[in-house]
Structures are given as structure tokens and as C-alpha cells.
Image (tube, rainbow, N blue to C red; front, side, top):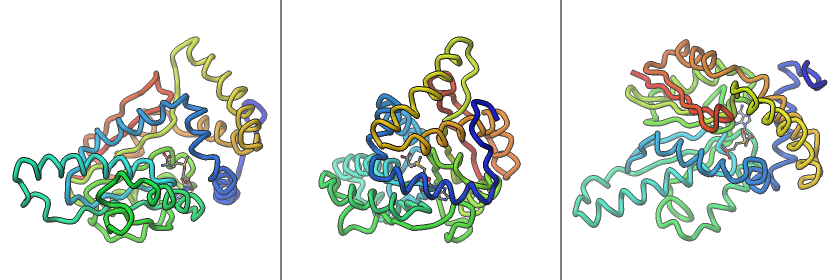
Length: 266
Ligand code: SAM
């Protein structure tokens, strides 16, 4: 393969992903900030804006890890609820909001649970409330009912899944008609010069920072290699269509460093 990283078989992939995230769980948030120079926060904001969350929604965030996306969704819904209360629309708030965070790695979920407990600023969904639900599970075999979710998000997760098609089929299955699929993922840069700079950054800088901060060069080398193996924007969009989604679109952010793909179950 390019850049001398070894190719991984599908069987190995699952195991390797498990090891990578167990190894990086504790330094995960710091590394995210360092590697994306804080940009992952804006990208996640963008993802949640595209979702248009609403009070009473049933949402599933897959590969939700430390809860970053789920926290944003609940924050967003809390703001809407607060406004609805101020304006006297209490009736709109009767249905219970449920945001499920599903991740295959219990260590990542534990970091997320701890963060949820620390974030006392939330008045809904954290602590004693039931709005935020942590579920250990595999994107390829979800434990949720058919047609049970209004929304499905997966941020920086689908790249690590062994069979992307299975994960997409499961996303389609658990969504209600009218439900929205959104995927935020590191993608492909095709802009000349920027592409070369980005390659240098990912293959030289990221593993070095991984070594320095997390004392773990290999895991970060694997992450970089997995970005290169992930299907380009158009190809991934066609896979989403093949899973049955309609109105499939994508938006490149920072020239394709990241892309948000979306689709509707109609
Ligand atoms: N969504 C979070 C974020 O954006 O900060 C976490 C992203 S992290 C890079 C990838 C996550 O995917 C890890 O928490 C990992 O445990 C999880 N993961 C990997 N394979 C998975 C699978 N098959 N099913 C569910 N989660 C998976």
C-alpha cells in the first residue's frame, strides 16, 4: 500500500479498531483538538445544524464515543424547549426526547458518561434524566427496532466499521419514514497543493503528535491510513443511495478534509 502501511484483513480490522480506541480513549478529546486544531468542534456543530433536532425526537448517534454529538443535539433541543416555554408552547414539549449514544467500545462510552456527569450546565438529558441513553453496540447489528428513530448520525465512525454497507443498511432499517441520515467523516482532498500539504500533515505530523502526546504512534498511523482507504465522496454517496436513501447529498468542509453526507428515508 501507499506510504508503507500494511494492508489489514477484514477480520483483523475489527480487532485493531477495538485496540485503537481502547488505547486512545483517555487522550481522545485532547488529540481531537490537537489534530484538527479545534475544527472538529465546528464540524460537529455543522452536522447538528443540518440535523434540525426537535424536542421529542428519537435520535441515534452511532459510534458516539465520548458523546460530543449527542451533547450538541441535546443542547440544541434545550434551546428550542426554552424558547417554546417562554413563548407559551408547552404542548409542543410533551413528547420525551431520547438521544441514544451507541458505541462498540465501553471505554469510550465511559469517558462520555463521565463527561455527561460533569456537565452540570445541562438541565435536560444528563444526570438523572432519561433523555441521554448510552448503549454498547455494533453499527453493523443495531439493537433498535425497525422504524424507531427520527434521526441517525455517525461522526468519524463509519470509516472504522468493517462492512460499511451493513452499517448503512442498519441505519436505513432503524429510521422512520422521513427520518434523516447524516454522516460526518474525514474524506478526500483533491485540490492541488492543498492536497500535498494535507498529505504531509497527515502522514508526518499526525503520527508524530500521536507519539508525543499519547505515546502511541501506531494507532494514529492506523487512523491516517484508514482515511486513505475510505471511499471518496461520490462513491460513498452512491453507497448511501444503494442502501435505499433518497435525496442523497454531500457537503465538503475545508476542501474535503471532512465531508457531511446526508440522506432521507422516504
Ligand atoms: N463520534 C465521536 C466523535 O466524533 O468524537 C467518536 C468518534 S471515534 C473517532 C470513533 C468511534 O467509533 C470510537 O468510539 C469507536 O469505539 C467507535 N466504533 C468503531 N467501530 C464501531 C462499530 N462497528 N460500531 C459502533 N461503534 C464503533
